[in-house]
Length: 113
Image (cartoon, rainbow, N blue to C red):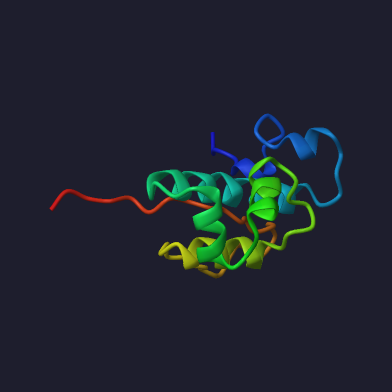
């Protein structure tokens, strides 16, 4: 049995369960917002300082971290993470002819030196 990516798994993607036409995009944005929140906390930043660093306002950042991010683009969320020093990597590879491709977000795994 192959494991479905979270984007296409209705048990992990609530937007699929609700029948949203752009469920995959909502899921990906939520994943990036979760990582943005973790990044801010791991850097020990306040929302005000983090907002300044990523080029937005504290109220807007608070709104995004509070779950109101439907009008924020994937690109903008990626720029926020990059502004905090995180690497964003997009890979495009050949897929199978009769199969729809997948979009995934993964954390980079650190190996011990």
